Length: 574
Image 1 (cartoon, one colour):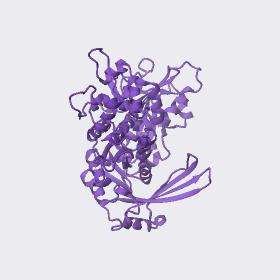
Image 2: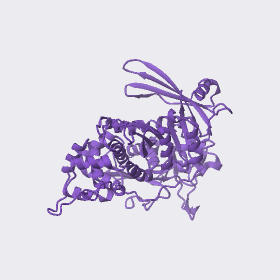
Image 3: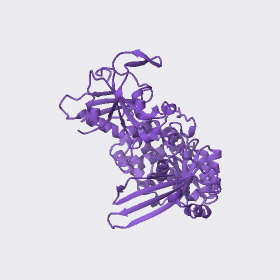
Image 4: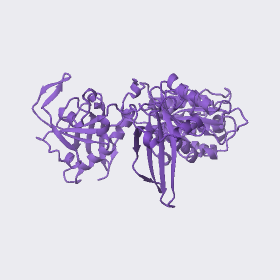
């Protein structure tokens, strides 16, 4: 870019993304996006944002500051417009993954002396005027260069104008949610192996050949490579090369100088005897630095089928996962004594909740939980109301929602998995005494309509809920997104543990084996998500075929295949 673009390239002003477009291993285009320009009167007029709020919302604009086509002329027809369209489709999502909030608009400035800007016109962008020919110098636009550039803009979502012109930004667009200053952790992102080194060893000193860290790392590596069960994991360990065993820190026979893999008995004994609380701490240390700013968290419990209710070991777990990515950020095992609610309260104490929204199911719709989330942890809640709270459920179900609702939102018709679905939400601020829960700011009703395209059956379900987030902080659309996002803990964590890692088919009963296997499965899910994979089954197949990638994901800098991480490339086909 610095060599071939007429403006060169040194660094971004503020936040930015770089895109590299390749075809068959060859670079054909480069692009750079950064935060929107500070001042631009034609653009500000076109946006229609309130003046006193304008400069607080510039983070919602992405500026295409550099765009360079490297492919030979005529080799790919419409390469520039095709590449631009590809970037626009994923720009907001990529920005949210990197910085914790999406973009609403994309802008660019075109110098007509060099380029016509037809690719932006063909892509449906709007030309809103010209600049005055000044550049920014010393924090002010005082450097006159005389080149009046054309300003092009395009919205990145249908309701972009409505959102940026609103009196108060919805919570999901605020880089500092709930008005709190939230800083990203500045800690080193250690590998999973670094955290496993902190595990205490329960075994006697006599006969310790393999460290507990190396055995658990092999257990997780085997699960990521789709080897299930101690026998299969022992076969996986025997297939590892000498340099891989050395990187894992397995025992080296002093007589032969060879690294020896752990046996099936060793794998089983370590998994059954390791401290579950220490593994829970490992998961927290690994995932907390990877949390996205402003993301809501979903909490739910799961029964461990292989656990023994008559033992003193935990036979259920409560899990907290990030909306969207499904990254598990906390797991806590518990026994029958105290129940799931008490375990959930204990998990709150171990998870960074400040400034976030916590979505929980109807089992936890109790006043103590609501008060704990608000007053103790400085977070907000979103609860589902069912028959287990009969007084509140009766109050919400008798409201004439069609007449009294102050806001509503209806999703577009969704067609997938052989069915058509549509959801609608109606919200209102509760009257005094209507809902006897602390800090309730909104109540809502969600109606789900479903049509099975194979059988022709139709169904309609209605559910109710309440939240401590006000209408100024979260729109009806955002509440519906949070309601759907709560299912991520079921679909991305619990279901993956059951169907991919065969947790419910596990016959382990000894010691802490059921709990530790569940925790290792959750750690494996966290590794897959942190490594950038969105489909778990494809990820395990990929790891099975490319062992170096699974070692890089788990061992990081300790991997025998470790290489400096290159910038992400986007491979598109013309």
